[in-house]
Length: 606
Image (cartoon, rainbow, N blue to C red):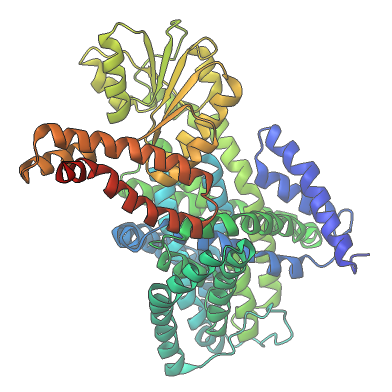
């Protein structure tokens, strides 16, 4: 029945459309919905799809696209700044976990080479599940998210070395290679030995040079042509091309896509690339989670349920303890440390890949690989449930320990200020000089305690939670100022405030022009970029030091600000067209120069 491609696509979409929204609405999250859908349509329940391995290999491309998009958000300077966490957190996690599982494997009767092979595969976590859950929760900018991402990125890099040592471990182990085992085309067809090492360096340098010198003129040409689908095509071409290059070298396709993203992170076209890739990433990533659910081998589970259960619990517990200890060393707070360990304690999709390579090299026995593949799939499926248990049972305890402010209550104030950092404080102090009542919410307990010393009354709570805003009086508020120090939280809050409390005027803090466009798209009433007026004040003083009168410098700054606001509104309307944006920006620069110097021209004529 699954021979029809259209039928398979219909089954996938129908299962996702029914089960994912139900799972999300019930509080379980979208990932669990995808996994349940996979279990139901897979070969062991309804049997609508009977070859989950083929689908799993194809859908892993969703992980590749996700790493490309993450790379686009991570400039090379930011990656260099992460080197401490990358090597410290990531290196410790992989090293300690591999050592622990190797010792356990030898104690359970495995030979040393086979134990090392198994340990390397189980030391890796699921990039797809962990990153998706961190993004869904808005944790990528938190200490948990930054630490988790550093560990996952290190794992994606170190998997290259793991694959490289498998032939040596295969010779030492001496098992019969399973040449017929389906490696999904993961085998390298590129150079070998020293030439392979040279090819790796050559490809990486070539990607950097091509990204800097070759791609920008190509992007510019495509933008000028104003053919939108061509931009989508080149975005997909970049991801597929980088993945093929890495596959040719026998390396991680996800790592290649990540490097391509980092190379283009400084490009003025990166936002267009993000918009074009995002729909494909989301669809394929959902398919990946469905295929993980389908790959759960219930026959293997039924044969040795006690053994499988013990391995699953042991793996999760050992990795949790190691991650929790590393989080303690790196001074993550209690709640962050706990969540960091919960998010990464599963085994991951690269474990499947390593076992595929290990079987072809004779480094592991087929029966061991089969059982451990079932363990990997089960730990991946259990992760969303573990995170849900953390949210319901563990997180509230840490919240109570961290809370130093009172819970929000309705004071019938006309203004709500969400986030009381450097921006929210200035707005609040100005309003308070006119005795305008403000209800202030912030989620940083230490900051609230500090502000108490100066007579500020700040309520504790998640300012992006609509239930908390309801308790604080959002239903009757005239103005809601959204000033949190998190771009995703600001955008999400503006969207939900507009939906739930339409009577309020929304004033939002933006972190740059792209974020300004996002907030305008969410129908904020007024958006202010946090640095623009400070930059103008510095520029105005520089003009005075260069000989301009104080009055003219002030007028130039005011005119510049008015022109920039007008330009922002105009470019917002054409934000989807990079070519039109580039042309409009060039014209606007000349017009701005003429406008600001009009008084000089008039004076010279008179």
